[in-house]
Length: 407
Image (tube, rainbow, N blue to C red; front, side, top):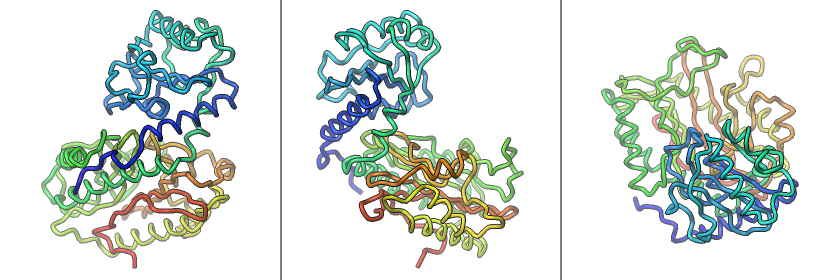
């Protein structure tokens, strides 16, 4: 299995197209500048390569980006200038600042005003901020702060062909690594052993970084096996050094980064040598595929999120129109430089919100239904598609073993 490289993909073109979209949305929004601090947004706006270690959001001396409407290249403050794309001019790359301190925030404000030339003539769109930024930044800039989602949301919602190819490559690396992990799965291994194998394999295959802590959760049969405040199935739980036993049912969830874009892998596995799903377990997997296929039949430009949730509920055939997904997650989410981004369909925001989501070419959908039988357990998996001009195309391609494969 060869490593993926970026030789056949023009990543500079990809970044140039993203930057143009951001500047267009910035002008449309009426904001005078966009300041991004969240790691996925920084990757999107600047192309800077970020490690996975700062995903928790600490704001002290992290990489941040500034986009100005009339300036082609973004500005970057970073502790790692070597990770900034070569096309960004050296004068646009600055030393990182301590954004948890008032002095650091005032220094940032001075550099923003200096970058803008004649100052800011409108609000600053921002996606995150520390307490010191909340207090000092509006005063130091002489303008108000507004939510950056009005700029970032429309720009990120529809992917270019280059972006879709990055997601496909990330997913392919993820799935290749999982073939090796599943082949090694047996009673007596620890959950952390699976993590070690997975992380080594994705780096051998050319991943840029790991996206989330790999999940190999041993599932119980009842919601009450693990207490939750919502009464919903407890998922995901932190991976531990627990030894796996014959017959354990694992809900698996991993995500890796390639060239700044995320993947999302989900399957249900059975521990055994060999693994032998029961008839009930195979039935749940089949019902899951019925829900997936019903939702996919509705994927086309012009369809609404509610069209897809209603199809999924009908296909599940549960008592009282039970929703075949976890209430604290969603039926469908997007993926891009963040592992979960718009469109979000089947959330606790309700039917009206889903009705307002209209599919369009370039949207990427991660479908993750769940079939749960109280007292028996459940089945969960994920698939990724990109919306096209007349339907969709697959970005994921992984077997359902050890369950019966669809005909």
